Each structure stands twice: as C-alpha cells, then as structure tokens.
Image (cartoon, rainbow over all chains, first blue to last red):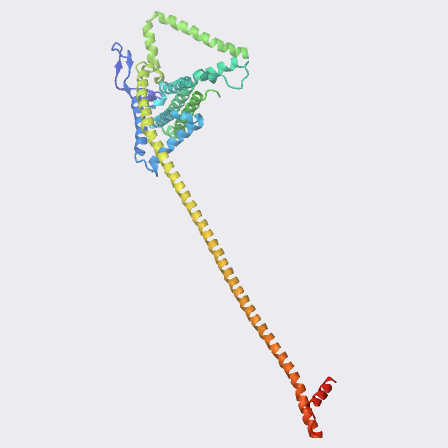
Length: 257
Length: 211
C-alpha cells in the first residue's frame, strides 16, 4: 500500500548529492543536495521567467494573447501593490511579483500528479515569509528610524490603554512570519493529504470486489471536487500571501496608521 | 458532571505518565539504544531521519540553499528584465494612445476653427452684398429723384410761360375787342348815317363797353 501513503508525496529525495562538512557518515554535516524539491523550484522559476520574457520579446503595441497574459499579470500585481501600499510601495513591486508568481506556479505544479509541491514544506514558506518580515523591519527602520516603532502605538488610543495595546500590537507583529508561512504551508499540505487520502480510498475500495468498485464512486466524486478546490486554494493562497506582503510593506512605508 | 470530566481528563495524562514510567522501567532492563531505534522505525522510514518529511530538519539546508538560488534568480530576472520590459510596453502604448488622442483633438480644433472662419467669411460676404444692394438702391433712388425734380421744374417753367403767354394774348385780344367794336360801329354807322369821326365812335364804344 505504498502507493496510497498520503505522506510519501512530501518526501524529499536527493538527485545530485552535495554534502558539506560532517564525518562522512549518513546524516552528519549539511546536506545541500539538489533534490526533487530543488528541481521543481528551478522548474517554477524557469516557467515564469521564460514565459514572461519570451511573450514580451516582440514588444507589440497591440498585444497577442500570450503577451496580454503577461501584461494582465503585471497589471494585477501592480494594482495590488499600489492599492495596498501606495505609489511608494512600487519599490517592492518586483519582490511582490516574484513572490506571487513563485507561489502560484509552485502550487499549480503541485497539482500535477507525481509532481513535487515546493510550498508543502514549512521551511520554504517560512523562508519566504521571513524574507518579507525582514524586508519590512529593515526597510521600516532605515526609512523611518525610531518612528517605525509608532507601528505599535495606534493613533487615537488613550494613554492609559497603551500598556495593554502596545504589547498586543507587538505580539501580532512578531507572529506575522509564522501566520504567513503556516497559512500557506497548512493549506497546501492539508489539501494534498486530503486529496491523496480520498484517491487512496478509491484504490482500496475497488480492490474489495464489485460492491467496493461501486462504492469507490463516492471518494472518486470527492477527489474530483477536491481537485477543483485545490486549484482554487493554490491560487487564493498565492494571492493572500502577496496581499498580506503588500499590507505589511505598507506598515514599513507608512508606520503610523 | 463537570468535575467528573475534569477528573477523567486529569487522570488520562497521569495514566500515560504511569505507563511511561512502567515502559521506561521495562526498557531499563533492555538496551536503551534499541528502544530509540525501534521508535524511529515505527514513525516512518521514508527518509533517513524518519520524521514527517515537511518537518525533517535534515532537508532544511538543501531547501534553503536552492530556494535562495532559484528565488534570487527569479527576483533578478523579474526586476531587471521582465518587469521593466512589460512596464515599457505599457508605457509606450499609453504614450502612443495619448499622442493619437492629442492629434485627434488638435484636428478637431482645426476643423472647428475652419468652420468658424467659413461662418465669418459667409457673414462678411452677406453683409457686404447687402451693403452693395443698399448703396445701389439709394443711388438709383437719388438719381431718380433728381431727374424727377428737374423734369418737374422744367414743366413748371413751361406752364408758367404758357400761362403768361395766354394772359398776354388774352390782354391783347381784349384790347383788340375795343378796336374791332369801334371799326364795326363806325362801318355800321357810316352805312346808316354817313361818315362819323373815328374819335366819337371810339368814345361811344368805350361808353357802351363800360355799361
């Protein structure tokens, strides 16, 4: 029953082993191997870059369909950044655009059978959210100096409530990278496990004879519906990640809310 | 009821603890390393460390390194190549559309100006034509009036002349009436009673004509 194991799809396998340090025994030192996860990261970046660069190479004034998709994607993310973080936020447009397209394409790759889902590993989503978090903190302090701390002091709050409100604001700020990464990771992981479990039911039930084959229609319907749902979740989570990034960047640009 | 549930909940970990202790107690008899080995195998065995793959720290360095490489490459490609290019395409299109709209607007304004010029020229021509017509009419009228007055003056002069001539003729005729009467009377008197002096006849005629 290895084929129906819902966890197997998340296993990382070395493709080109690269080991640094350690004493030569397995598991010691740092493993920088090129893995199936790395392969799909490269594929994600390659698909995005090649599509955007090749479809816009003609630079047509009247765009074809492929170029129009690139332009619409550009306009979609640009509007997102501008509406959430203002015109000053356009400094971070390439970052938000890269995050959105990377997560979106990685999620869509994950929907293809036998493909590895890069965003189903907490370390990847956590690294991306720490990138956002550190960008916000560093840019916030560089641009605003100590005024960046106003973020924790909402305007219009009476002084005697501040000792309560400021710690709450601080904790909510510090928990952002965790919520940002766990939201994406959890959605993708849970969705893929659920999908695998229901498709596993089909295999298990259809091996139980005629009634089992009839009964396997139920998990089949469920799996079909979940597949549609997972495409939606993959797109929505990429969008949510990008929008929240824009809102956090807005805090760095305009700290007093 | 509440206390019962609470008691059960509180009891459960305690029981586990007791079991753990018991387990540990039994394990102490066996090899402790063998026990840890058994638990790792029970959890999985897919990967070296045997934990749930997304939480396996052994894979973190590789994932972080390759994420940094790939995402860094994506960021550089997007910020240096793809996004400026798309931005340029959109900007170029916007400038072309704006220029076309401006040109169309300029053409429209030119058309409006041409229409206005045509209208003024038309109005000018119309007023000039009206002026010429008025002038001509006045000239004709004044010409006519002067000619008429000249003719009238001429006619009046002729009428007065004729009237004076008639009056003179009448006066002449009246003076001749006395002479004719005198001659006639003299002739008649001469036939009846012989010659009479002209002076006496004239006196008589004058006397008669006065009666």
